[in-house]
Each structure stands twice: as C-alpha cells, then as structure tokens.
Length: 505
Image 1 (cartoon, helix red, strand yellow):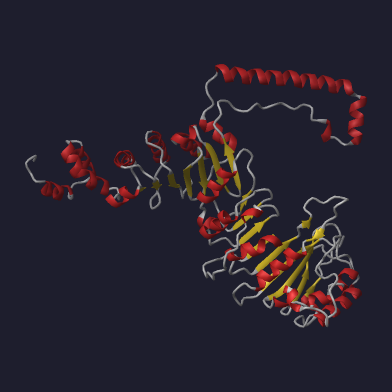
Image 2: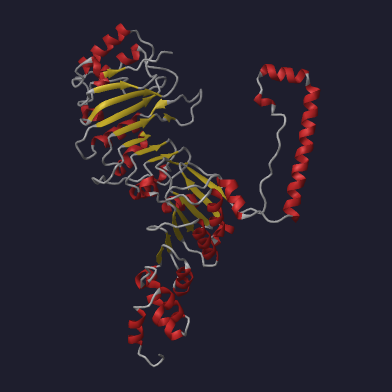
C-alpha cells in the first residue's frame, strides 16, 4: 500500500467511512496528508472553510482540535442545522473548548432549550477567556457585567432596617422605645462581624470562587430561546449574547465599563431579527457614527428612542438620506437637536416624537428654562426635506411654563416671512400630537394661543392632545375650541378629528 501513488490513495479515501478515514489518518504523516481533508469533509468541513477560519459542526467536535492545529479558528457555529440530541453534547463541547486555543467568535444553537442556567454558566466558565476577561452578558433588554474575582461579595445582614425607611410617626415611636432597638442593632453588628470573619477565612484559606458560581451570581438566569454567541473583544473583554424572544434593548451606562469597551461592544453586538426596539438612556455618551452603524446592521428595528444627553454632541455628523425599502424603522423619539442627524437612519419613518430639552440644561432660580426654538425649527426643516410621500405623525412635547414656545410672538399674517417657519413646509404631517412635559396642563387660554400656529401646518388633518395634557375644560367650551381649530386648519374638517383626552382627575 505504501507503493501506491498518491492519486490512487486519494481516490480510495473517497469511498471510506469516517471511522476508517480516522484510522488511515493515524498511520503515518504521508497518509495523514492524504486522508485528513477527506476525513474533515465527512463533517462538512472544506478546505475553503479551513482557510476562512469558519467551522460549522453538527454532531462531533473532534475536528475542532484538528483544524485548530492547522489554522486558527476564527468562528465556530454549532448545532445550527441539527438537534444536539442530549445535554451530554454540550458537556463535550465545553471540554473541547477548554482544551483548544481561544476562538474569537462562537455561536451555539439550542432551539429546544436543553441548557439550564447552570449548564450555560458551566459552558461559559470552560471558555479559556472567562477566567481572565470581563464578561458582558446581553439578555433581553439589559446588559450584565461580571469581573473575575477570587471570592464572592460580602452579604451584609441589615436588621433592623434603617430609620430612613420609616415615616415620621414611626421614627418618633422608635426614639421613645429606643433601648430594644439599640439591642437589635448591637445584635446585627455581631452577626455582620461573623459574616466578615467568615468571608476573610474563605478568602485566605478556602477554595477559590468558581467561575460558574461567579457568572450565575452576577448575571442571574442564563436562558436563551435560539442561540448564544460568545465573542472575545479587545481589552480583555468577552461579550455573550443570548438570543431570546424579540424584546427591546436598552443601552445605558455600565459602571466600570470604559467608553472604548462600550464602543467595542456596540460594534460587535448583532441581535438580528430579535431586536425590534432600541432605547438609549441618558449619559450613555454613544458616538453617533457607531450608533448609525449599529442601526444599519439591524434593519428590523421598528422603534428608536433616544433620551437627552444620550449621544456625544461632538460626534454628531451630517449624513445624506438614502431611500431604503428594507428599512423598517418607523418610529423615532429623540431630542430636537438629534433629529437632523438621525433621519438618515430612518428614511421610512412614520411617527416622529420631539422631546422637550430645556435651555440651559442646568435649570435654577437664576437660570430659568426656555424652549430650544432654534433646535426645534432645525428639526422640522430636516423633517420637511425628508424624501418620500408617505404621511407622517408628529408628536411634540412642551413645558408650558417656559418661554420661547413656537406659537408665542407670531407676527401678523401680512408681516410673516413664511420661509422662517418650517411648519409651512410639513405637507406630509397629517396628524399632530401635543403633550406636556411638566405638571402644568393645557388650559383653554393656552389652546386659544395655538390657533394661528396650528394653521401653519398645510397638511394637518387631525389633532390629538396627549393623555392628561389638557386641563378639565367643560364640554361646551371644548366644543367652541374645536370649532375654532377647524376654522384655523384647512385640513381638519370636523370636531371629531380633534381629541382632547380630558383627564378625570
């Protein structure tokens, strides 16, 4: 057999089963070179996939170790088109990953939810990078952070509760009968001293805190409905994404996570069709270009909500709006100053909500808040220039106690320069929502002041006040207000097109 040419041996290997090919691979270096690729092809692994560094495995994980010695694996996909069969397969996978060089990107499918929280934590703890890297787990709408630590945190015992949790009368009663309370606090101190002593003993002489227990303690339930993705990122960071049922994702500041690490997470995170709503909280300080790239990777997002101060103002850059029929982002909520920079990500937007942002940001008795009128007009001008013909619902939030509201100080019709009022160019806005940002509601006098401003919208056909935004105005006066609005707005034909949503309180 040693005298046969390589071409003939290669032809013979094409007819051998997986077990026979493995026996041939172990004969000698010559037969290893001849039979290795045919052996790997029985697992669906081609030479092109080895060179690309991507493996897709269904039932056996022995090729992981073999391919890792040929060329580093960059991406591993397990059980995508098959059923794991039993929990034992995941245990074998965990053992193989522990014995292999770190793989930057691992995707594990579990469509039948065979993995429990402890089993998932055990698998994550066997990944070589889990012992040294900071773990960021994305599940549902929240991100969880887990750092490597040698011991669990101290669980202090609070008995009795602090005085701040009682009302004034209860505190007075406690001060009168304070001796039993003092004894209780002394007893609590003794217990906490014992807790601290036990923690120090375990820290110095006990066994190290297992990675599995640490992950469960920091992240809670680790259950996913389709797939789990493990990515090793720069800066000693491991990102774990659990694909659950479609749910909103909330981006918020994470204590202990640097801006560079947050940017790396945002650039690597990919939830696919499972992400349909995105919310960015205050002080997140996201970079505009990174958020736009994230939105481009997730065309199935339908609702985008940005709070004030959620983006870095210095990172805002103007982009051109390109029509994209695949874009499903139809609802946008953001401060007015963000709207011109976000419209390129929402070419098919159907509802836009402008949040109230006071000027200055730090409001005090010496610096009262005013409405940011230039940002409001810039946002409406950008919305008027949005390509397309579909109708748009516009919702505006105002604080009625501030100055510079858009309907105040309007000049006479003869002296009005229409080019300075972007409302006159919003021909696609057919429905206007007005809501209040603050305790004061719209009174009858406030609504009368809106008449001329509402008449600036050429395509307005319906007007709705937000729930609880209008004071308790009598029905007869509401009818008069509705008739006056119909006369001021050409597109509103009847009072039935006006909803006041009067609160019963």
